[in-house]
Image (cartoon, rainbow, N blue to C red; front, side, top):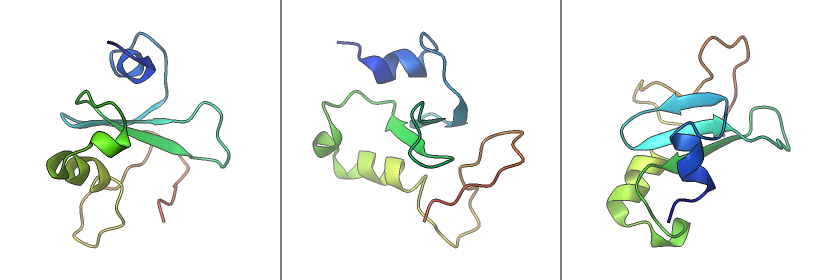
Length: 86
């Protein structure tokens, strides 16, 4: 069954896309508690976060981790603002 996140991923509901790859879709939260609050959701269908298997968790959470490997951080494209994911 398609949920609100599927509709956002497929562009049926507008969003401010921050990051998109084959595994995850990241977008700014419409009701941000803090500037830049970003939701990172897997493209795989799962019931909730507790249904993630190890591989899905790695794919999803490694996109937002503050790693030192030099990989690209999630930042809005064409944005003057830099958001911290600490």
